[in-house]
Image 1 (tube, rainbow, N blue to C red):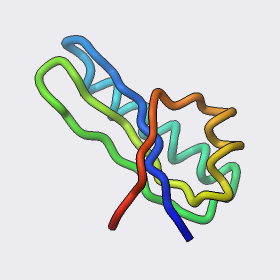
Image 2: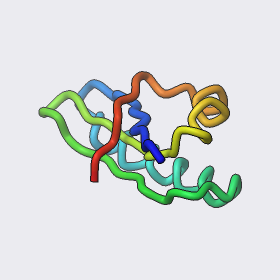
Image 3: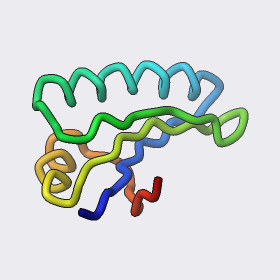
Image 4: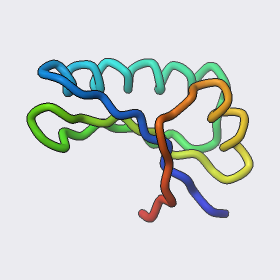
Length: 78
């Protein structure tokens, strides 16, 4: 089954801290909704841009997207 990486972008001097905190909420959502895949994370793109992400399978994408409103997405490869 195809996997998708949903991404939230954060910008500014506190971007990495905000992305790290956002990942906590993504993990909570996965637990509450009992999603199949439990892959989340956060990365610094540069000093003023960071992302938080979660991976979902194709079937879960639309409800998760509508509930959490990610900024963008891409195909996920392990």
